[in-house]
Image (cartoon, rainbow, N blue to C red):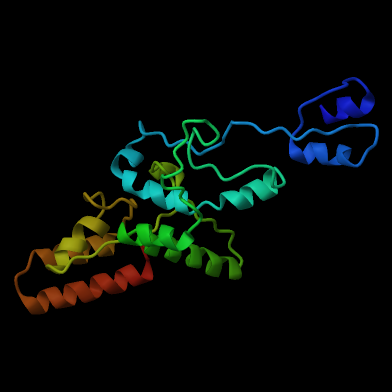
Amino acid sequence: KALQLKSGELDMALLTPKDAVSFADDDAYTCYDMKTADYRGIMFNFGNEYWQKNRDLIPAVCYGLDRQAIIDAVILGQGMPAYGPLQRNIYNCEDVEHYDYNPEKSKEILEAAGCQVRIDMAQIAAQELKEIGMDVSVDIPAQTDWAGQMAFLIGWGSPFDADDHTYKVFGTDKGANYSSYSNEEVDKYLTEARQSADPEVRKEAYANFQKALAEDPAY
C-alpha cells in the first residue's frame, strides 16, 4: 500500500506505523493517527495436552513478555500494553491483574514448578557448545516429538537400590530407556548386578557398568 501511495495509484491507505514514517515529513501527504480498540495476544490452545497439565505456567508467560518493548519495536510506540479484551471499552475493568513485565516473577513461577533450572542448564550448555564450534539451539516444545528431537535435557535418579535407576534406563529396550541407548557391555553388567545378592559382586558389576557407560555415554 505504501508503494501504491507513492506511485499515485492510491490516494488514501491504512498503513502500519513503520510504513507511515516515510510520509510523516512529506508535505504532499497528510498522516492521521487513529486510535483503535483491537489487540494482539498469544492464544493458548487448551485442547493441547501440555496446557491441560501445565495451566499454572501461563502466568509465567504473561509476566515474561515485555509488551512495551514489542510495541516500541514493531509499531514504533503507537499502542499500549494489552491486559484485556475490553481495555478501550466503556465496560473495561481496570482493577484486574495487568501482568506488567516482571521476568523475576516469571522465574519464580517456573522455579516453583521445577522448570527454570533445566531451562537455564540447557541454555548454558548450548552456549558452551557454541564456544567449541557446535551450532546448538534450545527449544521448549509445547508437545514432545521424540523422533524429531536430537537431544533432551532430562532429570533422573533414585535414592533406592542402584538397579532402580540404571537397568530400566540404560538397558536395551527397557521401559524407561527413552533414548534408545544400547550397549552390550552395559546390559551384561546391569544384569549381573541385579542377579546377585552379594554386595561385593554387585559392587564390581556396577563399577564395570559405570566404566562401560563412561566409554560410551548415554547422556
